[in-house]
Image (cartoon, rainbow, N blue to C red; front, side, top):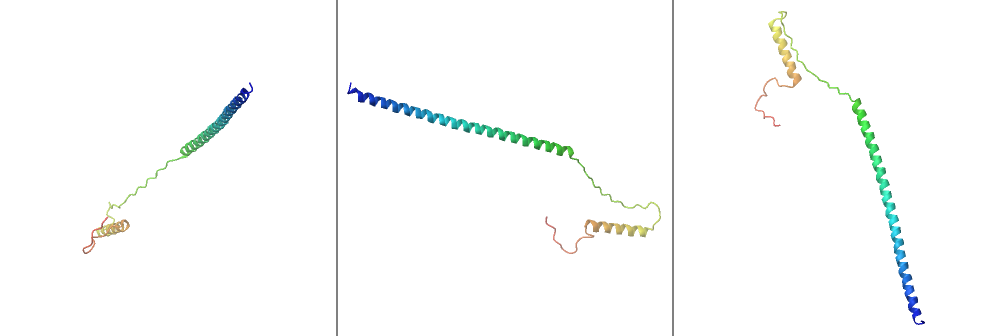
Length: 129
């Protein structure tokens, strides 16, 4: 039995070493699990917070747009230009006066519209657009 005692001690020492190794592995795994769960919980909380903020922002934007569209008034202005030429129905002016009046009116219209009075003199080049 004296010879078996060192082998038994060596076997017990090996068993204790294996048990310690196994226990250290379990402890490391439990620490890793705690870290992963904390990270997942933090990510979930951050996701919920971001969703709530985005939802609140969207609601505020929708309310603001609804308020703006409710207050919006559409006003369309139409500008109509009417050219009024006098028509002499009664003989209160001579033919010469009517001719001079019409010539002055045509000249004023050409001046305001920017049209030429007549064709350009000489050989002018055609405008290129």
